[in-house]
Image 1: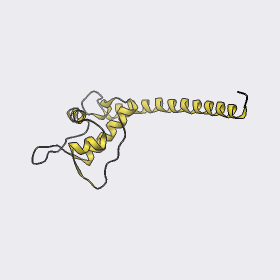
Image 2 (image 1 turned 30 degrees about the horizontal axis):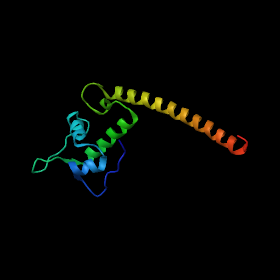
Image 3 (image 1 turned 45 degrees about the vertical axis):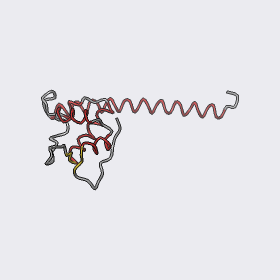
Image 4 (image 1 turned 135 degrees about the vertical axis):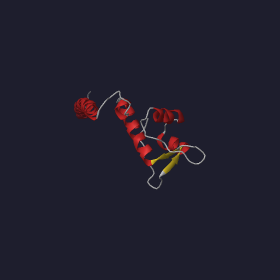
Length: 125
């Protein structure tokens, strides 16, 4: 899954356009709609889905949550996470975990930088 940019000049998008923009499959889009993760998707006069900018903005959340390994239930109002306070608590907890991972990656980066500098300065190694 990749993050994507919503075209600024457009307000309505066909399913085919959303697939190209998001890199998601049609099945995934229908699933996210059924799970009430992206809000209601309007239909045109032929009953084809016409995704709004708001739908695509919600899909950005879905893509971000999936990329980070967050539970998609945090995006839904389906009752699994009953209230706003619990959503905030869950997201805050995950954010703390992400910050720890960032600190660990920064320490690893510093270690590797020191090793590289050591080997660059020591031609015999």
